[in-house]
Length: 478
Image 1: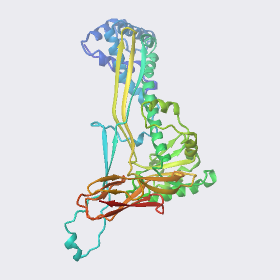
Image 2: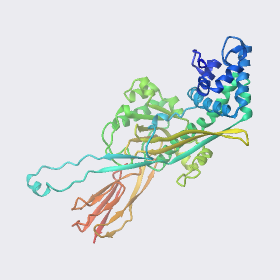
Image 3: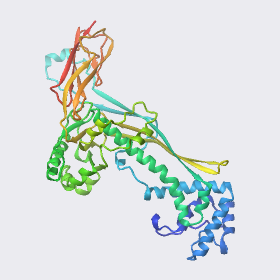
Image 4: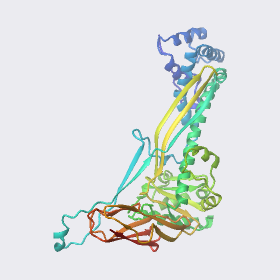
């Protein structure tokens, strides 16, 4: 017995014929010589399959109704039909009708194995003066490489749920549009929720990093049509500087750089409408079409869905809602430029499941999505805002003159007072160590070698944004 035919034609969903919409589903659930295929053929008017399009509207609708009768009177067929309808047709509707997260280009893809990403950065080796006499004592001394690591772990496990009543399925078989409407109802609420939340969390992550002083900031004038080219000139200047190694544009203070093709600009919609796109494209040395792929928009930096964010972060103690003062600060931002590798956003799991409730005669559908939301401390990012960034002070804690035995470990932190989104990161420096095993890590952790011969060490924390602001202390070794 031949398989139920798939009729060729226009694949666009808006003009897809009913047989093209249903045939893939029926081929999935009613293969050759299957009981369901036999029942469908027997129920077809004039001996045709229910979804045969012969140009006769009456026979077409009669075929649809008979298809509904066969499926709705058998629990097994009914569940098979809904499952296949969702899996097969749902993906077409997703492509054509779903709202898509505009920041999706920043995602890094699917993390198929494990739940943690380790990001490693190796700093440049230090130069040394050639001196043959000193080489006798220096040749076999160790010089450990400055290797820094950041770990990005799975931190979001969410699911989305929707219910389809049996009455909804019966209604779907009254018209061909009812079948696609049913699928849209199942898919849209799940995918729309996931896509919208993904955008909200990505935006929250970037704004929170800006407010907490983890992103370099450059002052620009209040935007208007008259000075838009001046602002583009400022952006171009920073873009050009990014191509050279510098420790100013990332919060870990490593010597990083970003070539033009790896730079992205995020503009709020008002700025995007005011600034000439062609001028901005030339700032990145890109053709207009190529630049459009590196330009991303945001509705507003200061407007966000706090109610939805509270639901998303309901079980997250680290979530801090935006205050009115913080939203006022965010409103000063016009654009944020980020390197391709700044966002560390990975999908870990995306899974659909469904279950029929026989007692309540309804189907529940779930979409599970597990993700990593993080940012790289080693990648460049710059805020452009009409505010004056500055550093007021840097203070190492614990301060004073701490003492500790050799072979021990001490953890220091730097309290940095800033204004106007200035980067609060510091560069840690150690002086006075005589053994290579005595090191100061980039997070302020001092590890002292048990073989250290020095009696004291000097530690300095210098502001990345303003190197005239620093603090230093002396550690006594006992």
